[in-house]
Image (tube, rainbow, N blue to C red; front, side, top):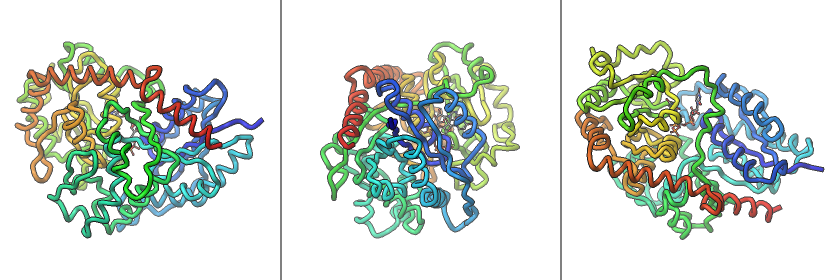
Length: 482
Ligand code: UDP
Ligand code: UDP
């Protein structure tokens, strides 16, 4: 007898793959034993790293019968075209992989005695949408940011029609999205800022396909973002079509069991020595980095705040306009060259600086940690939420300004840093915010609020909780479709 399978198609890149695997595990946990398998399509090519390969091997060993990876054959793509943005190239690579290998992989899965019940795609993989529609496979998006960013993307094609310039040329204009705090045009994700960037067209293509899907699965929960959830449900965000079913099934966060741990990280050993709730953790995602001048200013702010801190510092990007650093740039980076003279000595005992990477989920859940300065990446946001740690929001790229607005203005889980026009943050501003979070009445109230939000996050997954119900509803919809 044929076995039912759900096919997942993540974008390449560790973060995207991890999120899809977590979704696959969730689907398995909430299905009757042995009733379904998960098939994951993997795009090979320039984004393939040893970390991804070993992650896939680990997951395959842990779930030998229920999760199968299907790696596309290697496709060589020109990634050196300087006239195209990084995001445009990423869309191109996925489009090419989809055209060459997607249908073939689905046929292969079907031939190995599987009945494909549904396809779940990342937004970067919208190129698979028309092919799946032709094959009549129910297709869902897995949207790995929150309801606020989803509301914005649902509505973006409409806003795009209302203005005749690139958003980057409307720098100080505020945009009004239904259900969201007002947003500066220049704070939209970079790929949509410039209409002449091919990635703009790719994004709008994705946004207008969201409403054509059989459903959108979102990594958030209703109680966390009630205002955009309501705006979407009321049909205010998708204007020219019916709103598709939206399933809020979060929070899903990285399962640290799947991480390769050789020995306890030095920062966890250090945290063991610190008083409860006393340490501020600063970490800016997998790629967030700052100019040398900004790193020095952060150091000044931390030193003056007199609070304990654990700070993850990445290499400053070579391109001074960038806020992201590549793996390549991390090599040969000397921490001492970017920190002010004597900083490490002067803050010894109350501060620890870590180069490149810290095990964030474990750090946030350590009892010594009482606050988190974050770039508002969605995974980081959910991880802080589940750990009950309040934040200082310092957005850098992608949809992080949207997340910041939601975190500061709606959820009241974060204090925003005030940025100068070029987005520089002074040491004195940081000092002020750090004291506010770690050593004031407001900070104490925020910690209480974070504990409350943590409880609500856990409730969403209890029996009859909103996320558990949403996942069941999605299963029922798939059953009804086939
Ligand atoms: N990651 C990891 N180990 C590594 C490198 C990355 O676990 O050695 C994970 C990390 O948890 C994060 C993600 O990779 O979730 C970042 O992936 P990526 O660089 O693809 O960023 P994205 O495109 O998702 O923003
Ligand atoms: N992360 C980590 N250690 C680091 C930096 C990042 O474990 O030093 C992990 C973090 O826990 C989260 C992910 O990387 O799971 C970052 O994802 P997020 O969506 O917050 O931001 P992105 O990296 O995609 O900008």
